[in-house]
Length: 476
Image (cartoon, rainbow, N blue to C red):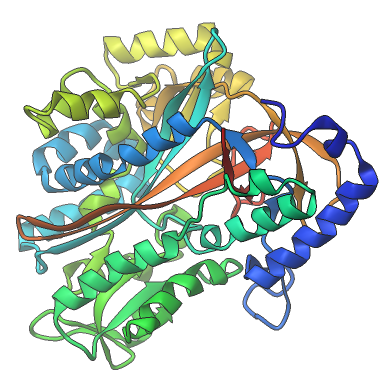
């Protein structure tokens, strides 16, 4: 699959420039927006969020497979979050050496000790995949990770299908434009938030978006906020510092921020160590976790999304524990797993180290981090593992088989970047939303998808990290 359009179109520089101008204007018309780098906290000046000129081809069967398995991954994350013993065992070695995971785990333990204040659980996840090219020329779907906190681009990806449909029509390819699916994760994610808000049971209470200090990607949030306001559900945007200054719990553990009762805390921040700028940030996280407010995610669901848990789940017999008597579900999920290997201080971990040092180009070394740009490849694996192989520090990482997708040619449209053809790799994200009340799963849905594409010269990093751009699958 070289491209979604023929070579004569790809190489027609006059037409490509014309289409790029049309595409950028359409992106602005459709609201595929970001604030500028220069003024990230003001909407006085905005630009288009980076995106591909053409949609990227994707086998329909693989796309359907990714969507079909999402509700099972929702269920799995939820079951793990309730399994105290499993989380303790899975993360035992990691919390010894990774301070960030250890701090989260300490909050988790305190909540368990006090008892959870809220029986309603809300999960908004995104499971990310790449297509691994097999020797016979076919592709297989392989999961990279599952994001259980601050899974982004559900808003903007709701607006990109119309952009690519329009570009293909202008390019004289209306039949291809019909193969781009409508997509509205913003509405689906908002459905989950709305259901949780409703179950909280107070019409005056708000949904609090916990946001970062730098808010370039605000429009991605705004689409979800807009969906909530359509339902007359009030939203507020607050940073850690705002909650520190004006947040408190009453005697019933109800959370108030700036005088407003909070029904749901939706974390769009708090997923990286640098988000916690001081001890007070950790105090704020603990206060919110202790509160009656529904957390998205709560602390145990946040921990369920760690790389170490992902690696433990790939071991034989572990998925079966969460899906007893459901061999077909286990089979569907396991089919998406790439090879994942432990670096614990035992024989299995020693074998992993030896395997990685022997053939570093076959693997990716992953720390327990979210947000993109953290993974380690190639000669860097040799250097890092060479330094930590005899030390418990190695247990802060997991090793994963490197996925080898087939590059596709496309143009990446970015502000102030020359228009050049690139060899590109794509990553498919699938959004899930679930709400559980006590023992009862009230809502469990696959709510949409996201395609992100980057030049094959970039090993790692997402749209927010400035490496990948927004895209759409063109089903073939």
